[in-house]
Image (cartoon, rainbow, N blue to C red; front, top):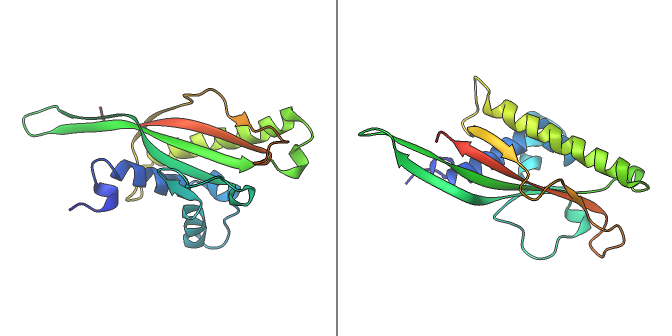
Length: 172
């Protein structure tokens, strides 16, 4: 049986988890410090696979969730070859820092910049010429539900931004 990262269906989920955890932007967002191994471990602890059970507490943020997306395909392209690809969903959620809560524009700019930097980190990791064993071949990243959204600051769940990306992967 293949290891988690080599499994045809679960493997891309695990490889995206590893790629997000290794991203400098995500490590900074979650406050990961120390050696590269310690930063990776701290970031991995803030990434949930197939969602998070129960209501999110403010103290849980920031975090990421990764799940299988709407598309998956394995196609035959030669007598003995196959191509595999699909999509994954990546959700990022983070509390708005106290210094950014006064204005909607400042809070949005703060989160949009994090989101944009993370997208660049993911593409940089995907294009690396010396990839880690967990490298994921990312073809595209899109926002299926529009721009990241801010929760009503007066809501019970706190003042936070949440954004969802669709990550298209593979060699289809």
